[in-house]
Image (cartoon, rainbow, N blue to C red; front, side):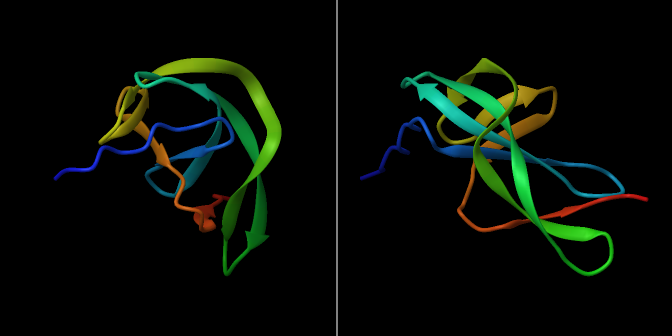
Length: 101
């Protein structure tokens, strides 16, 4: 029997990774959700420097950047944040991010 993915709840996090010459991580906090939609707000990250120009990023709950926005929820794929950009539920581990000098 296939199990349906859980509906996100307020306080969950979504992450989008993107970039060509570097890895960029955008984090979003779920502010509310339904079975078909999720409302998100971009949030700041806490970072731990690593070797070179890399660091580990974790979400900073409630440290909002910008306004709440709504996206259609695709239970198997996450939420589409823009053309070719998808955000997925955060797995709970610090994420590798980088900077470019």
